[in-house]
Image 1 (cartoon, helix red, strand yellow):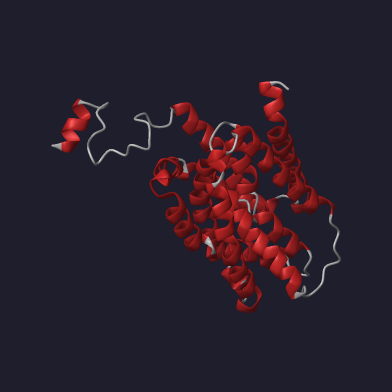
Image 2: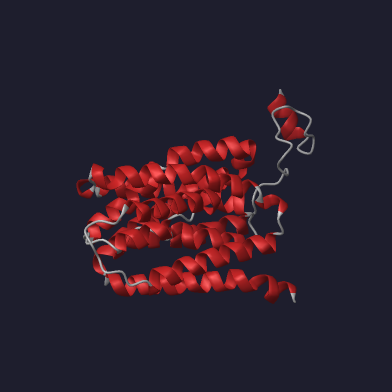
Length: 279
């Protein structure tokens, strides 16, 4: 009877089964298509080079008008499937001594990031866009410019700094991949082992990330989670395409291309409030 009443009187929201926090209208078709395109392209990058879905997808969605919470949840759900799939396919290259401390330290930093994320609704959204843009710009410039001589192992201090900051960025905006990429690029690992490490560490933190988001935001997650479920099929197709391209294309050239696109996104996020709103 409640369901029938809602169908007959769609604007009546006194029923306990209707969430008062959300508007009665779902995402528009244009919004769904926009998110599908952005996240599918991010999935291609993720499959090909082992990261970058969140680095590209979250700033792009924020730039397009979605809140940081919405962008984080949409990216989190779509990349969860990608990371578990990639980790399973490359499981032969995963060694326990390599992933144990990084996975634990990311879990330490993640709650701090979700607390920072909870503060963003009270901030001006243009400022949030610029913060994300600056974080992305610094991350990409660091990835491109740092030339560290590869070695067998890094000191625990660097490991701690890398993965606590990665966990924080994961909790704040689901963009924790950049510190991990700098870490694997500083080691003498093969490409396959590096990608396996990235996929596993990303997948390992997903259950805690889900708990942290649910505890911090509750019902606010339902709407972006619904969007993420809708765009999951094209994201999986993008992941498959990326995994295929990762084997066929020159890896350095593809990485330079992805970094160039990420730089464009970062600069656009930083400048968009000025360009669209005026000085």
